Image 1 (cartoon, rainbow, N blue to C red):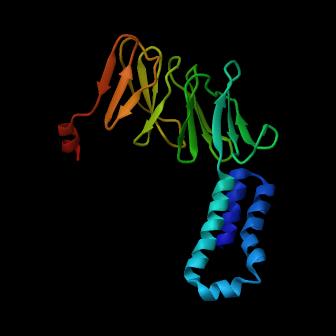
Image 2: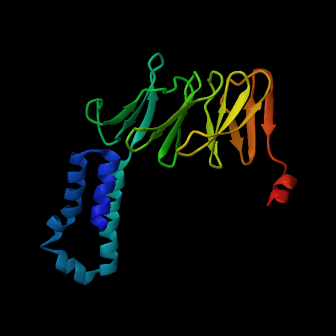
Image 3: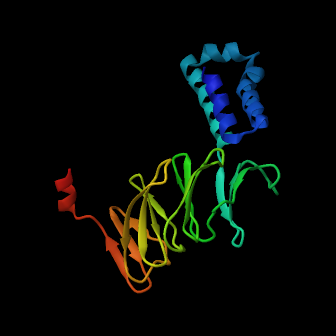
Length: 220
């Protein structure tokens, strides 16, 4: 059962039968290499530790092969690439797991929350993509144009437009606007977070926004 689950994980996250075969080969490699001396080693060492060690090696191999690096790129024709990190040299043709260009941002950064990637492009188009497959989960639109990068906190996505509006979205598999707030003069810079405080810089002011401790205690 464990082997089936591991193989399924590698195939789902990489979409490559080559990596599936490589994972299986590396999992069997210790058996091939140590068949002749395995009995001697087992007699001289703790067998429980040997078993756990072999399982850790297989788990590390699966997750190494399944890892992806997400790279936003381009300006006039922005796109988001998911790249397997184990290549060398020019890996454009061999290690790009998927590409996403429908509403990818040119200036704001993207957010990875669990297995979902959230993005707000310059024109206010919001999209959520499955990080493993590059498939769109949902797409929507919010008011304004955007230069500042969104942030994620407490199961929510906060997006800040150039007119000063903050739109709060649910960080889930459905497009849902939870709240909207406005400050004067608009946002060009990305926000900063310090503990429970949110620092926002508009064109003319810097704001610190934080719920008072007494109010938080009262809500509990």
